[in-house]
Length: 421
Picture (cartoon, helix red, strand yellow):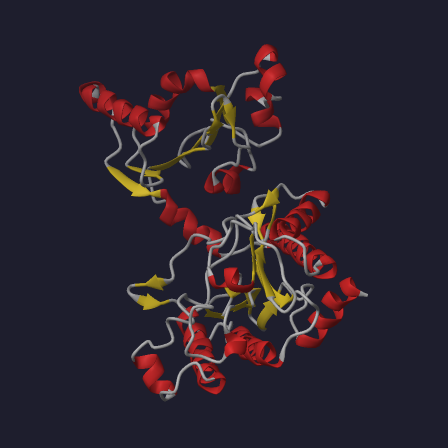
């Protein structure tokens, strides 16, 4: 943060779902990452050079309000249970915050900041500026806390990895549950319900993002979340779903045959994606970058597109002219952690950053062949295939965190086929 600096974060408020009901509250990712607190409305101030460097503002205890909306921690428990050096009711924010910010040179806040707290901080800064003749000093510089905390979150410490491993284990369990119960005639939402029930049954707060459950041609829609179509024999089913644990999330994608067996054409396409997935995982080392992984996976996918009859040009030409984009239109990786697309730079000084121990990333190549493409082999039309694993970078090489979710053809056919026996 630098010398004479402070960081201020707001945990967010309840959001209206319909009329006078709210969505289930999810704390701000950075706020929970630093405090472990998941109560709406709370404010965090960290000022390392202050006698009380860690201050929390929380809703006061109110038995009548808590009867309607749930228990609050109150200022005393903010100190006892969450380690705050000082804590105050939210109503004291206007009284206490000016003193906490007086003399701060750099104030770290998340951008963009258009919430009421930011408006109040601007007013406090104006007030401090107006009292400068009496010795008050407003913040001079404002810096983006998302950058600061994004970089911190890149490096997973043992506590973070414990939570993330649990999230990924529950994610894998949900996928296995889907595989063992899927059969023709079911609806996508039934599979979604099975997956998310498995998450919740095991103590997860729920999915870390909207679950994607796409059968047949629906799987060619990258962020398909309608999940309302019936599953038919002969189709493939793509599921992209992850459980949240301690507000860390897993992120797994598996694709398997609804009937329990791949057709020859489906298997050929699946093996192309699987080969790219495996090769990408092998490059998740400190000697490489995310761009290296994407380049490797892309070449394998393009080679596969030629072998499958999707494209006829040379691999180099396919890549140079981006002829692959109708069938593969996204990047192969993203960071994973507190958020499914986690914070942190991908490039530093315009250069792809080398992977480092403690980074967690996804490896998720895919092929998406829309049913409307009538100039390609019929057995490949209406196929969406993605295979996504979560990988921890270590000094000794990549550690695949998602091995409990099967992805080999024989494993999938044995597991999904059991639902039909």
